[in-house]
Structures are given as C-alpha cells and as structure tokens.
Amino acid sequence: MLPKTSIVIPAKNESEGLRKLLPELFRLYPDLLEVIVVNDGSTDDTEKVSLDFGAVVVNHKYSRGNGASIKSGTRKSKGEYICFMDADGQHKPESVSRLLVKLEEGFDMVVGERASVSQANKGRLIANKLYNYFASLIANYPVKDLTSGLRCVKSEKFREFLHLLPNGFSYPTTITMVFLRTGYQIEYLLEDVSSDRLGKSHISPLKDGLKFLIILFKIGTLYSPLKVFSSISALLFLVAFGYYIFTFLTDNTLTNMSVILFTSSLIIFLIGLVSEQINSLMYMKKED
Image (tube, rainbow, N blue to C red; front, top):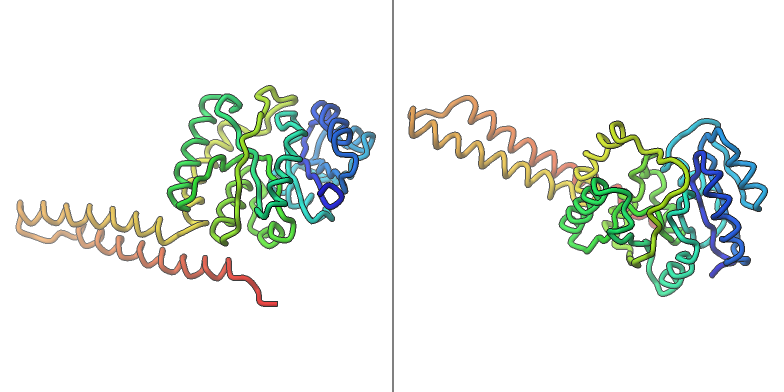
C-alpha cells in the first residue's frame, strides 16, 4: 500500500508540529510514495522544516484556506491513495496504516473518527454532534464524524469532486456528503486523537463560527435539496393553512397574508424540485 500512497498535510505556521510529525511519519513509513506539505502562506519556517525532513512542499504565496490547501496537495500528489492529516500533532501517524488497510478492503474513503474526549472544547463537540446527527438523518447513513480532517481516499474518486470543494474549513463536510450521494463507500475507524495540539488554531470563533451555521443547510443541499426544501415548504404550508383557518373563523375571510404564505410554500417546493434536478446532473458520471 505504501509505495502508492501520498500523504497531504495542509500547514499554516505549523513548523513546531511538523518537527514532530514528519520524522515520525518517515520513520514509521519509509516506503511512502511521498509526503506533501502545503505551505499556506506561512510566516514562520514551515517551508524550511518540511524540506529539511524530506517532504515535498507546495507553496501558497498567501493564505488561501484549508480546503484550497487540500486541493493543491491533491493536484500535486501522484499516489493511488491519498491520506490527509493535520500538521498540529492531533493526528497520530500510526493511524495512517489502519485507515489504509480498510481502504484496501474496498472502501472508497476511510475516516478517523474522533472520540468525544478528543474534541477541542465543549462548544465544538456539541456542534460536531449536531452536524453528525443531521447528516445521518439526511443521508440515512450513520455519519460518525463529519468534520474529521484525518481521512484516506482513493485518489481517482476524490479527484472527481475536487472542483466542488470549498477553500475554507468545510471541505470534509462537502466530500463526505458528495461521496454518500454518489454511492461511494465510507468507513469510520475510532482513532486515538490527541486533544493537545501544537501551534495555534486558524479557526476564528466569530468569522468561521458564522460560516459553520450554514453547514447544516449545506449538508442537506449537497445530498438532497428536495428533502430540505420540501420540508420547509410543508412547514410554511401548515402555517399558511393555520392562519387561513384562524382568519376564516374570526373574520370569515381569506387574507392577503394567507395567499402570500401559500404562494411562498409552492415557490419553495418548486425551487427544491429544480435544485434536485440540477444536483442530479452535477453527480452524473461522464461515460468513457
């Protein structure tokens, strides 16, 4: 497995973590095809440390985001398999081999599932549990860790959807829902992930916290827009119908508000129907 495996590590000012991670990777896996560090506009010596330990370095002149780093590393990689992991020390190098074994068994993506005690803080733990629950509900599949950055994939299948990945921190969410929608097989392995990260988190609680609020909606629209929009439409229809009954019983009339609510319900349903068709075209495979 190792001679056909590339490891891609996005890094922004992560020289401290890389000094610990890279030598351990090369010690455990001397037969790896390559280790690629994507230097995302770092201002420290991330590039030098990576080169000194023998990694291939892809430089971003300025910070473009975690997802952009994943895409740059994937385009540079040559492996049949690609493993993604963080540079801050939270992912243990020993996990790579376990994930690769599952990949060899026939899965298309294997994800390192973080235990609850490994989550950075209670707020993030609650958010992740909410994401996992909602994703599982939408996809009708047990999504155990939607946002984990530790995952190994079959390169050919991952590259199919590279253009769909956002440049920010929600790439794991996107690729998970896209794989499930396409029918590719995903497996989760519980991994011992360290909660003591080296370096500084690049997630802004305010800026990225607001972005994460739309992830739940994105989960639904990536997998099944009609399911999301029809639910909203049904809720709006019930409100409209309830308001109509109230006004009919009190004033014996159909108000403009009821008409607007009924019309909005219909429009939202039609938007979902059109979105579902567009979504189906997006996932349609090209014939050889």
